[in-house]
Length: 164
Picture (cartoon, helix red, strand yellow):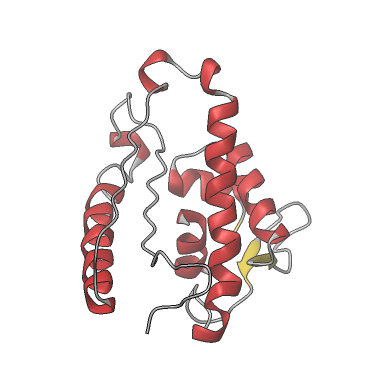
């Protein structure tokens, strides 16, 4: 999602530019940009020079399409999150010992639609506070790495019954 947010902010980005802005390797950014393109969320932008391979969002204004296209956007984004986690599990033994453990938590809550919106806003605010703390690579502590923080709030539906 950070790549999508970056594209919404700057318009076009190469994997090298994304790596510099997000603190990841160019190879990792390139992989995720190709995955986002595979799912139809981004596309190649017209090249700025012969070598650069810039990417842009498929939607012109905000990085989320209108409500009708929200599922078209979120389902592939969630698939990419899931794929990133499966990739982490597959390579867990190669990770440094300090990074072999992750924090997982979940809860079943009884919430109204308004409460879901409030909870989502609170989680986003908390993530934003941490997201911007170490933006500048030169001042970033040596022991920091990019960490995926994924939160999903959705109603648990019976197979045959939708909420009123």
